[in-house]
Image 1: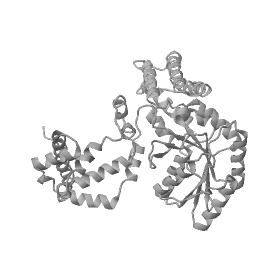
Image 2: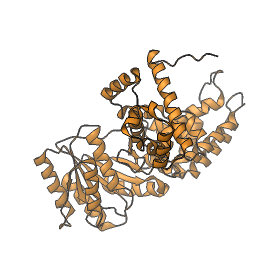
Image 3: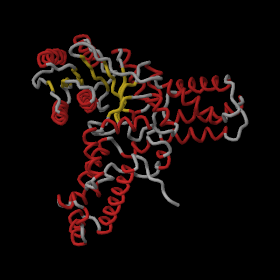
Image 4: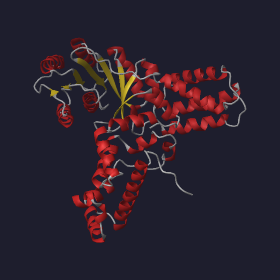
Length: 438
């Protein structure tokens, strides 16, 4: 995500390196390159021009401290302007009433149904809500079944009427059912439609009028770039939606939709989809996204994702095991599962400042832990609990069972042993890393 844009911007800033001060000439040269980078990222031309004009005005109008290098100042100005371009601050969902009603809209194939599941799962697990999903895509044969499968997966009920094509009645009946069953949020999944399809646009407008939703979320496939922004404008003219969802932001996207959409429709991006899993949903924070675009990482989001998987009672239990030297392979496997829940590995590592750039050409697959898991799962319960009993014959059996080499098994056991020793040393040192003797 944003890799090519990040590289182009970095090259643009090099124009100012070594310059003693900011001048109209070197700023113009830098921003000409920045504008090209934005256009290549599929940012709306008018948006790109306005953006670079605003940056130029701020750069030339600023009294520069001698301690601040021109290139550093330009990075700061562009960071702030990028954050402002994408909305400035995070905008959360407005959930009012009993139940709160969310209407999902968008083009065919934008990922509405999947995101409906992700949103319901997030509201249930993180906000303590009791959502109901409503299957109002009555035209795509598999849509209702898809929503039901997602509902079973995340344990959220789905309301549907198989024999009805009247989406207004289905939505109204679902809300009545939600009130009866105590569901405090209703998420209505509608059919994908083209903005030029008058009949379908009239239908979704009728649903809006009938159920009076608190939120109308326009779901955009970020990989469609500038086309997505143009479509968003047409939908907004008809529906006056309250927020934007960007899906597939973990894919090979140039970022144009994320950077342009706020300035074109003046509606906030509220969430982004960052993978296929039901947990792969992030609140959109403009300043954090600007950090990532400029290669600064996003350590705040990284910590937040880690905290979501943090179990205090489990951590206390683990601490006692480490103190008694009872930390085993089952505990290690459990920690791997927690890390995997945090999301795409390359995306996660890219949140750490400096790491994303170092790994840009490295292929890190989501199944990076697969071989480790296979080795551990080939051990007996006794071997996982007491790794010290792993002799050569046991190791060979584990290698055969996992389909890995004996060298890989030995390497994992050695690394695990080293990690256990380090964990004990850290705990005995009051949570601090021990000093290394030179």
